[in-house]
Length: 244
Image 1 (cartoon, rainbow, N blue to C red):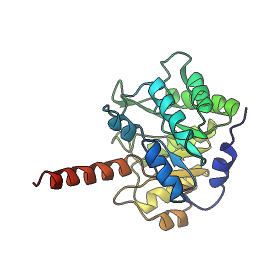
Image 2 (cartoon, rainbow, N blue to C red):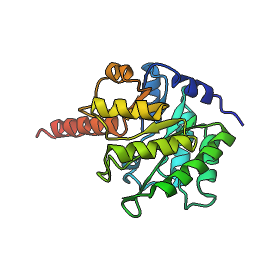
Image 3 (cartoon, rainbow, N blue to C red):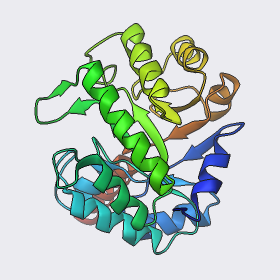
Image 4 (cartoon, one colour):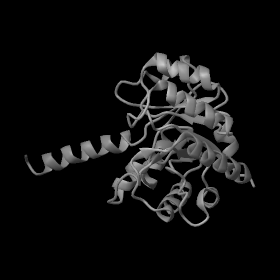
């Protein structure tokens, strides 16, 4: 099975670096495409909050419907922030990947943070799930990004992060991602020691896109950053509207 945008998405990771912002509805998706971005990604936190929920609170059906809505108005590749790929839902990881592919996604991610326990999964459990996702993504032609969340949640140092990313690479992930890294030396170690495409999350102290490119990073995403900025502007405008 092939998806029309997957080859385009995969090719973007072959050389250089590209910015991948994160819309949370059809309007923001269309705006970002019109601005010339080559790919976009969903944001679990941004989408959840936009529908009155929160990060880790949306259902698989809500996510799949959201992906279908976005791809109905986009011609560029869409990557999906799919948390743990809903391993406990009917059909587990494999069924989630199938549903996302059918909804038009070009790629998806899997992370090793378990919100039910508020803890990072053991590396063997997490790697096994990455391997499941790799097999499903190969069947449905999606680019898989494997995420090590321990650095973001303060649950391990850089060595542990790299150990996890290397294990996920060896399980077949095409892209690796450790949100929360901002130090250039740390990022360069991740790039060098994993040897595959690396995504970096843009934060206030993150190096510029050009600087990340010079370190060998292939992709920079915004996470919920654009949603947070939009909410801040919305609140400021509402405050001014009220004359406060």
